[in-house]
Length: 501
Image 1 (spheres, helix red, strand yellow):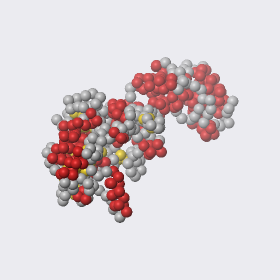
Image 2: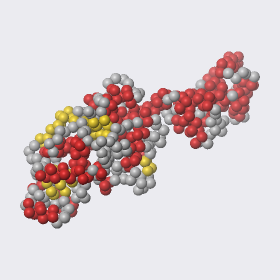
Image 3: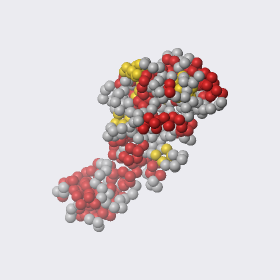
Image 4: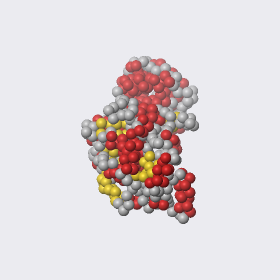
């Protein structure tokens, strides 16, 4: 059975790049009748942020990504937090020591810093690897007795992977193709830290093996670590899963990875939900709180780096998962487009059942201190307004004229559309309206007859009438507005602007 996992670290809010990684894993599991596992990789306790795990789970849940196993739902391969599995990892670190594929390193942080500075003074970069390890303080250079003395004394040590010399590490990536790296370019990564916790590299490999993960679908930033992971699988005599490294999400201009700073600067979220930093109290906006439908958010995100092979853009999760394949994921980074994100939300505004949308609109009106109309009128108003809005939260502002007469008028529109006859036209038309049976057909006929009988420029009349009732020359079809306002309110608004004109 296909088994894939999403394994975030609880070090802060979940970036939308992480959501996309989880989404592609979800699609792959659905497409192949497999399982999706959530694993929290919290081995680095120094970077742990309170509330981050809860945020990650809530953000993924809001996005519509469903897991089969995880810390919030359990499962047969638990526990699903690495901090609760730390006893498991040490035995595999010792297995690597015993097989000669790892070693104890006793260099202190201060000693390594001094070596780095020495290298920097020669304009070189220090790397703990097959070329430098023989001159450092570790069990490869110390005698067995010296090594035992260090261990028995209780001094701090780490366990490092022993990368073989003069070797080419090779593997196939579903997205990238064949990858080969010379072992001289791979450093002897720390597998077990001095605090008794495994590093990401060891814990990740052990957990993927024990949880029977068949495919590792993760971000491009982990590609440099993949040769190291391939070596670990080889040294532990385990079959490696298949790898697929996803492209980065890029800034709108394509220059570099999309960051929170880009969102702050350009006015769009980079997190699924709003996040408040527990240390600083700083708030970061989220797609949910910004008014995005989760379906629109997921649809937009899915097409950043993947396409279904045809012209479709607006698709359900079922449609996307059925069409999904890793072979259609791009190797190059995908530019984030905030305008396109809004476009997707508009498409889902138009697809939403009108009663659901009207209910949300009603809530927005109440939160803005506006008394909504009855359900029937709200359905009609919502239908009229949604074509011109991207978010439900935009509806009160775009349709405020339905609930209150304009207190001011758009000056540019007045200047453009008013004439010295505008006031007299509105006064006469108000009298005609007063005796008109108030149906949409009769409203349209009354306006058309008045224009025809008096040879009035249609554009001038329609625009000044719209300004009178709306406050500007934009909005839904005019007779739709007048019908909902009623004859009394319509005439009242027309008479209110006459003195101004």
